[in-house]
Image (cartoon, rainbow, N blue to C red; front, side, top):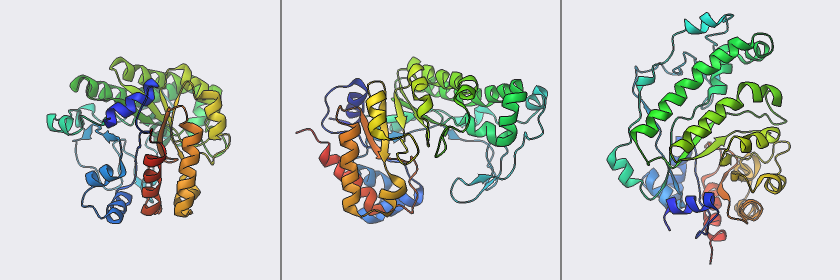
Length: 343
């Protein structure tokens, strides 16, 4: 069974040989895994681990950015992705302030997947399209405090900014689908709507300002034959019914140590409507646990979330940092390959 077949079987609720495995990590983490496995390349490491996904996103080809800058004019600093140091639209009071802002050019992105790439990835589940973190970009362009205040007292301004940022990602992703017909199997996009204890805004505000745009992303993927998945850390239990309502196919990463994200409860309430993806605890088990702890937790999550076959094995964070021991990461995948195997 190819990786593509394996992932398709999970979404179609059909038989498979084992559950599919997904990996996401910092380059330093991947290097540590290569060293641990004694292999010379990322591709060889992923084959050894049994990873079933390949990510081929549009590539930025525009003017080189200064270190720490983003395409939105935001400067960042700190560990890995870091924090925003400035908010270019913190002064905005009227829609014309948004219209007059200097925006990135959609044409600075190469959306083509080469024939060689398509050939090499033909047996894998191909993830494509833009990551599309429009919620984060809007709050960083304005500053989160101002953004939330304006959602209450100047909603048209926030709506105009969301529309502008969202269309940037939407248009590039649609060009990706059009340029590479039938190549992208999974449109995986990310916006962290949750904190450790609840949503970052009220469910009512989320439904007004963000749900309609997520629905457009889901509809876009489906229109071109791709399954859709949302990455959102934190406690987002209040909006999971909304995600099902807009037709989302899979939810990642299932931050199990956040409030109200008990995987057993989520599976019982929503498992018939969503493929769960992740949930193997990165905060404690993978970061500080022993190998036997990792293997035990991997089996537990497979029993909880994968008993019906609608589960993608991965950590509870989509970007494993180098503080997570490579030995534990490899143990997770090794256990998953063996334990979820259909005999």
